[in-house]
Image (tube, rainbow, N blue to C red; front, side, top):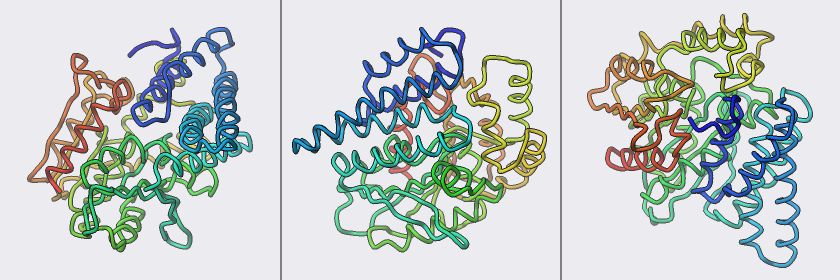
Length: 379
């Protein structure tokens, strides 16, 4: 992985995370590298990280306000989308609290204004779920035309949000005539940050809620709805598709098999001050709604696909990077091999072709194109 910030794996991966939103109009290389240059002169604490990304986001948001006032809506929309990405990048490593919530509200504000101008086919929706709702975006595919068309439900991972996934996944689906419902499930994005709903192991419950919503839309053919999860979503989606038989196919964009086992290694890294960690120590307990890592590890005892995915009978795609420094490739192989799917594929991206890092964060476009082509071929 390119060390944009030498010796700091978490920050370098965070920079890569931002950089790869360029393809979707939500980042610019010069702006990202400008933040990196300023960070090189700062103490390497995560508050400095938040301050520099927020500084860049605020600059673009103010500029967007000026362009909007001048009637330059498309230019303003581009600025707002980039501001939303940078606010989110800064917020990722900030511990839970009012500053984190306030920063995420800026993400929502800027994304709403940017999407209205640049992606007018995107609609914010609320998906009924138990006694509440889950926030989501429905990205309508214009090439799909007026007849009911396929759709993909997209869940996030441990520290992503629908504002990014609706673009890096949904744009390529849309170009192939496939609608997208990008949803913040329990423990994700807005659902966690502003509604306090933690994750759960039985993701077939939010998976069923998402299916019910999207399949009822007149634009969607309910016989051709798939489910995809990104990063930790590589656990969520296979779990959902195994139990919720109405899904037509499943994509694990980043393969998981035993999330408890994966975190045994990650916890050792955190506690030994190994720099090769992708998220702060607070992230896992916060996502799971518990107080500390010991409690989080107990919750993760149920986050296993062995004994579950053997019953998956939908077409399955598992993608992974051969050099994934967050989730070792062996977990993707185990998911693929254990799956009961008659139609399944494991796609491993190499360093030579690009996309060899976690969920193709070193070349998101390669991953997005392959996933979208595979879904279009199978749905």
